[in-house]
Every structure is written in structure tokens, then in C-alpha cells.
Image (tube, rainbow, N blue to C red; front, side, top):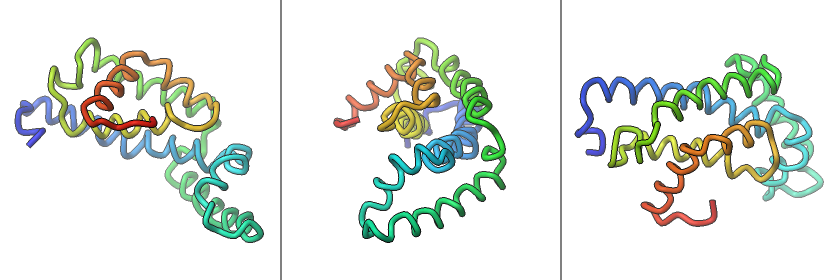
Length: 160
């Protein structure tokens, strides 16, 4: 329904952006949360594994983290340094920010489903509970942050 009003060209652009979000930017988020040992040990482990008894948490979390890091390496993004990932994300997220321009939403005055997908990814970075170069990068894109604020106000979400 939300995509029906888009032209064929807009649908093609939406597909390309969705693939970039789901197949690249998603893995940057996973890298942010899992690959950096310090960030994992100080934040992710205690949030994700809060229900696991404290004595077992380091062993279970460490084992799962090892598998996630292996997956990130196999996918490719896990082979890059944090600086390289930030540069890649600056290019990709910057492309979305540039395309958004001064529009309220990606394809004009009304949101489509891709606006909601974009909101989820951007807030995952921007609302991260720690200071990380990727979080700072995303928060530096004023148009994307304003876009997220518009989606948030439309949906009535709070706490992000």
C-alpha cells in the first residue's frame, strides 16, 4: 500500500537502498555491537545476555560472540578496521542523506515503508548507549536525524 504510489524508478531506488541497508549497513551495526571486544564486554554482553546468570554470562556470551564475529568476517565487513567501516558507512549513509535532501521523506511529502526501515537502522546507530565513531557519524547527518524525528512523531514512539 505505502509503495503503490511510487513510480517504477522510485521502486528501483527503494530496492537498492533497502539492499544497502539490509546487506551492508546491518552488518556495520552488528560489528558495532559484537566485534569490538571492549564495547561488547562493557555494554552488549550485559544487555543481550541479561537473563543469563552472571557466573555463566561470560562463557555463553563469549561463545556466541565468537560465532557472530566469524560470521561478520565471512560476510566481509568484519575484515575491516573500525576506521574503514566508518569510511564505508560515511559513503553509504551519506548517499541516503544526499538523496533525502530537503524532502520530508525519501520520496516526497509522504512516508513509504522504506522510510520506516531507514528509521530503524538510523536509530540503531544514533541511540546506541555508548559513544562510538559510527554513532557519532550517523548523528552528524542532520537531515537523517530530522527524518527520524518526523517518523517518530508520526508513530508516537518515545524513548529513542
